[in-house]
Image 1 (cartoon, rainbow, N blue to C red):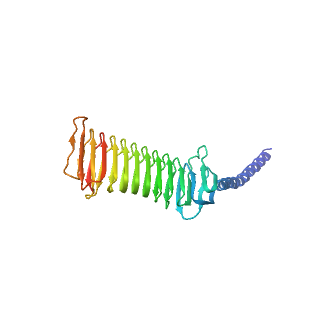
Image 2 (cartoon, rainbow, N blue to C red):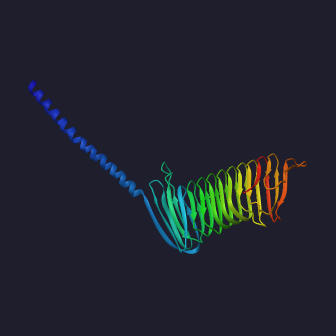
Image 3 (cartoon, helix red, strand yellow):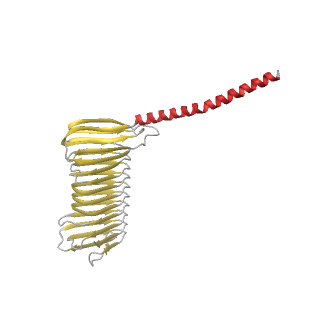
Length: 318
């Protein structure tokens, strides 16, 4: 009896060992198949975008991409081309249509944990078209473009390196940089910094706490305003042009060539005024308090008005 029990136990141990040796490769094959399935599903979920339609040279184009980037390149072709790859979770390229005088395209952002996946689009448009772009965190970049621009973003950056006919750019927290030649430019931010360079017949920039930096900008009429952000201007003032700068508590720094011909009017209620352009110094204003500075360089001809409440004002030569 004992011999029979021992034999049974030996057979059970042998069967268990055989099962263990078979189970390991089965588990490996199962894991491999599961991983392959995930890879296939992921690859199939990606969207490769390559769409194009014919358009008029002055067509109106609307673009919506909330997360990721939008890179727009102007070209001398009567067509709209969009390329890019949307990873899983980035949403769907859910509309693209139009033709002739108008077109629109956009990415639908899904809800859920993958809603922040980037959608990076490259958009080729007729160089003289009218372009409207909306983004949330997506960065917007424009180059080689000569038409009209309306650009909106919440926290994404906006960068224009082109000569648009006109440009309107707004961002809450993102930076805005515009370099080139335009007839009209209007820029607004809340906390985002603004950088301007080039030439504009008329230009305005407004911010709450961001820095406005104007570098080598030429203009006929310019207006820069801030609440707490600094304003730094370094450029030429065209004879017959006007420059208006206002701030509540941000510092104002203006650097112009020694050959500038303009009439300067500076008022500051609590802050200081430092004049490095002439020997004229600010004087106190008894009627309303604060200090003011008035002087003319050269033969005059341009109007420069600077107002501040608490921040400092510095005038200096380039």
